[in-house]
Amino acid sequence: MPHTLFLRRLLPLLLSLATALASAADLSPAQPLSIGDTLTLESKALGETRRINVYAPPAWGEAPGAARPVLLMPDGGLAEDFLHIAGLLQVGVANGTLRPLLLVGIENTERRRDLTGPTTQASDRKIAPRVGGSAAFRAFIRDELLPALARRYRVTDERALMGESLAGLFVVETWALEPGLFRTYIAFDPSLWWNAAGLQSTAQAALRERHGAAPRLYMATSSEPLIRQAALPFAEMLGRELAPGSPFQHVAMPQETHATIYHPAALQALRQLFKPAP
Image (cartoon, rainbow, N blue to C red; front, side, top):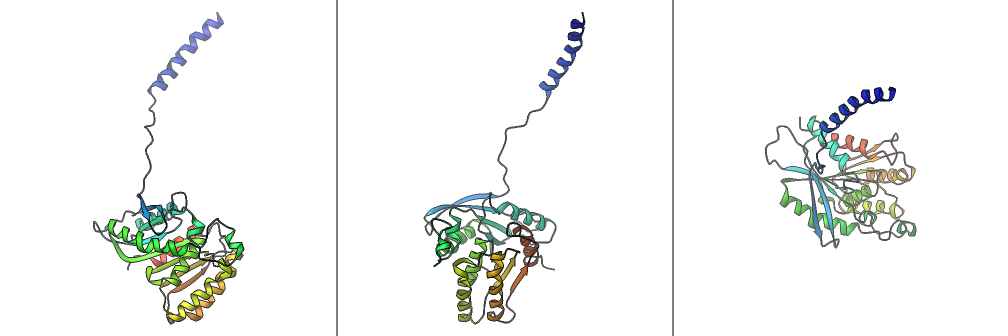
């Protein structure tokens, strides 16, 4: 008898549970999450196909089809630095602290090949099977990517290049060797130690040839000793060689490490360099 009573009480509970499960809504099939465009470009300069990610944050009050400046970033894959910079732009444009930009990220294939210049140091050559390919990567940007972007998107002639670590090295090298390619260069913790800090003498010679003329360079450095040992003498050299009034800024961020500097430094730099007109 107790067993029969237990089953009699349990049966309504089981029926109620079965009814609830049957009526519960299921999630729909998953769909890809997209915030912009992902494209590929066949590169003759590099001999490979490169993936490019593009994001145009919505801008209230912007005229339809308005042309935008380009912010180009190496390390621009979805698993690299593209998404957190896109987030900064989305929030900054929405709250009125940033001008609308077209963010373009170049996804890596052989990062250490593309972002480093030639080196005479055996220790440098140990970091990857191939290094020293920055000239070819710059040719890809100059001759293939930028023209392709201009054909696909409405862009102005204002362009900026931004990167951290080895990408920061590439930024500073491009600023020194091909200053007309971008209007603004932004480097966070650039790996200026590369090739025994040889970029310093290269940049110094280039500046002397141009009588100190150079586009804007914004550089931020963390507490990382290896970075500071090369960046501080480089900044001092620029203080001597740049023409008076040249737009160079070195921001020390000792509260940050090499692993943490990119996001806070990018927020600070973008708010300063791309603030809306008054």
